Amino acid sequence: MTTIDLNEGKTYTATFESACPECGGHVDGEGIFATGEPLVYENPDWNYSPEEGEMLKNIWQVCVNGDWDQYS
Image 1 (tube, one colour):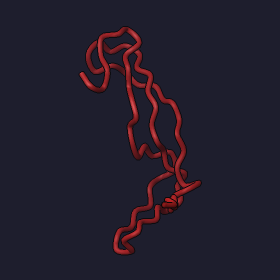
Image 2 (cartoon, rainbow, N blue to C red):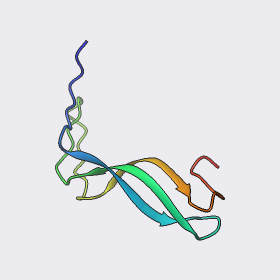
Image 3 (tube, one colour):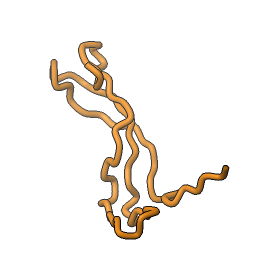
Image 4 (cartoon, rainbow, N blue to C red):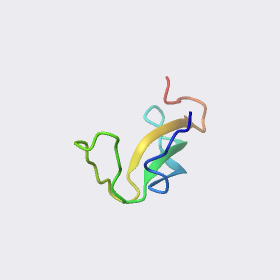
């Protein structure tokens, strides 16, 4: 079976930094972000045009102090 990615080239994976909700320290993470192009869905009634750089999915986040991760 062949899978077609309807949104190829409309998203990208990148690392990001934020603050830890537990200790206020540094958090490293990775997510899927939008290029700003409208996203295509198999159902034509669904329509969403994200902003450029908008995070569409958080893949992981971990506090560098070891006190917190997104699954805590």
